[in-house]
Length: 395
Image (cartoon, rainbow, N blue to C red; front, side, top):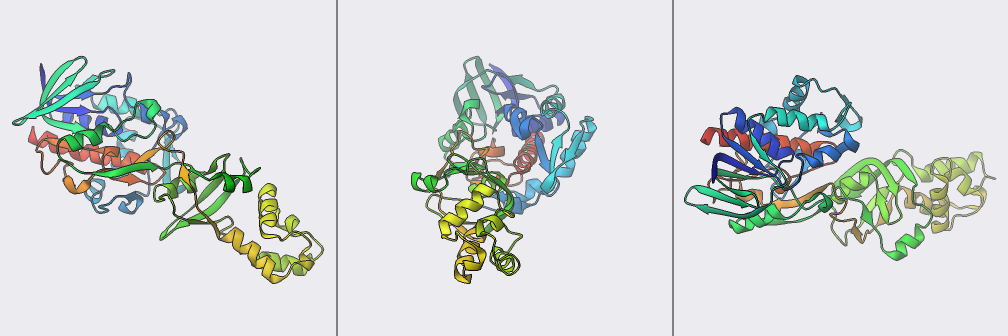
């Protein structure tokens, strides 16, 4: 039975960062992963270019039942720290809208960087953990390739999003095994779906996109691009709001946040009274969508023949469309999982379980979920760094 100072289960973004930091502090580190290669979620992220962080990271970009938990780790390892690491390895990158940073080349550059930083760490892949136990101050990890022991165990296996890549509820099962509570997880950053009746009304709109749009749910609001799909709605603005949405809730979509549609149509009626409402509307909305909006509100006809009441109804439909999704596309395509190991059970400085010395949870496994745009990777880097630092000090 091989012995280490730290065993990390999960060779994703958080696990690799944690391993590299602990290794740099002189620890004997083992990382175990069931996948044949490390960093698979990094590899597919950002269209293969890895949206590895964001220039504008703040605690407000994260959801959690315990909103202040992420503050400590994010403050101690910032986006600028990770950017410095990227630059140290001469990885070219660029900034896109909303502060998002991407590799100029391949996402594999980030994986290679992390593996290089973890030089000296023992990494075993294609290995399944079959049993985890603790006796006194030692954890024993049994796998289908042998058993290992360590004084510290880090769970970095993420959540169940994208199961085709082997994602599972392993982290939650470990938390429950050791008596920690879990905030019930659900898919986040995921397209939303509609019932058959709503889909029938939207028939013919699949593929139509608008940018920008504003989607509001309660006190939360995002302004980004929207896309109609065969099953509902997608696009960055929908992915963002999906992390907050719960079944049965109604959200409001402003399809033209920069235009007061009622006022626009009134002015058009005064200057172009003989034009069809649909024709004028198609100048500011995609044609297919303009046609649907006119049909839904019964505003077909010339502007001159359309009273204020009807124009206002049409304007309200476009600037304040209330819609109630019936579900989401689920873990199958969700970019992240909202919920996870209850942060009230963990130290915000070290990620260690308060009731189980030596047991740590990091990354997506924890009930901290970022917005779209590199924020979840930054949480992986920050929580992994905090944990690796703490483990290194103990060892």
